[in-house]
Length: 155
DNA sequence: GCCAACGTTGGC
DNA sequence: GCCAACGTTGGC
Image 1 (cartoon, chains in turn blue, cyan, red):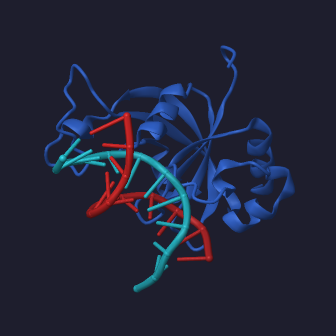
Image 2 (spheres, rainbow, N blue to C red):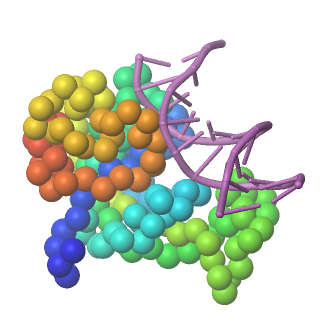
């Protein structure tokens, strides 16, 4: 990836836990609680300004609900040090943190959420990770062309 | 609520 | 290092 080249991602959240409306209200949030190495590694690749498809998982239907952007690149998740937190990790130390967060900001909400079923049946989105069977990863890379198609579908 | 698809853990 | 058991995610 060339320096300065904008990248695109999809980030999943259960709307009952944190929805696009919560992000709209908050304007900006720490994406805390990622406890999967592959997802963490993708977060570490994120650059300020990258585009994010905000996806509602475990929703009815599951759908892309809006657009966000990266405003702060990966830094340690304070919850891993908090013994009271469900995200506490006894292996993590301040010197050697294990888990990171990024900060994302609200950009816009889709006029209508774009259901997973529609993404799957859109030929031009073929190969998009979220449409593949068993795609549980909570953070996924998205191709520029796919991001732009989905963004257009939501406006 | 079911279950497929993973990821993680721990015994060996 | 292998792999069975277990836990979690998330669509349906």
